[in-house]
Length: 301
Figure 1 (cartoon, rainbow, N blue to C red):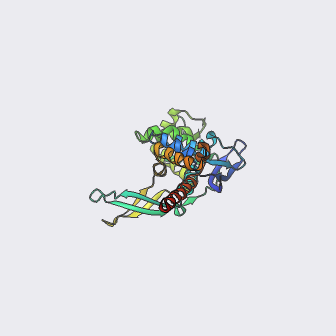
Figure 2 (figure 1 turned 45 degrees about the vertical axis):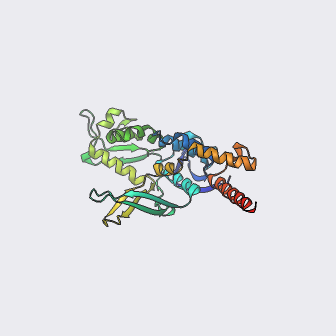
Figure 3 (figure 1 turned 90 degrees about the vertical axis):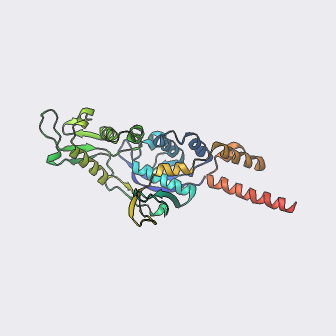
């Protein structure tokens, strides 16, 4: 199976502190499509992405094979980047998405076409994995009358963090952010591996400064699309939900997938294993060629 080499915008830092960025990515096969068809819609897109990446990412730096534990601990931007490239390998570079104008008095349906290559990807300069910052005096941390502390040490969010907070984020964003800080902040002043109570004692200003610093040092995949409504001519930004969009494109029913396998097995006498291990594009190409051949034979009969 053909594999393509990419360079992660962040990189995986191993236990020795080595940063691994060069990545080999293989396209989806029928096995991944079967997995997605069975699991899309269960609300666990972060966990599903971890599994899919562990199957399609063949190498990160010198690390091979790539386990679920490794793909789970990739930075969020690296996972987004790999999903973009996986989408390109599966469906091509062009994206056609449908949105609705957010202005209440309009709400018109609109189509937006763009290229994956045009999505901005920014590499992180400092690979961490830990980052130090100082809170402003107004945001300094105080615990039960202790003196004020400004030093914060944190790591960046990973897929593992996404998996933990994703069931909560749609119900209570504030709680989800507190959970994320509790997982990512490694030190507040003298408090190493701060407790949950320490996180809740951070002021709103401190939380805002920490969030901003995390954003500043993290690699970035800008998934915000700029659009102009053709009806009301208002300009607005559209958040592009990459997970939902890509998984929605792959939401092929199991019945259709199995019919395609039966079709190729019946005429080519290939095994299920051989067909399921084909990339989607190759499988569809064989189906197209076979359909053309059957039509030609019928016309000659």
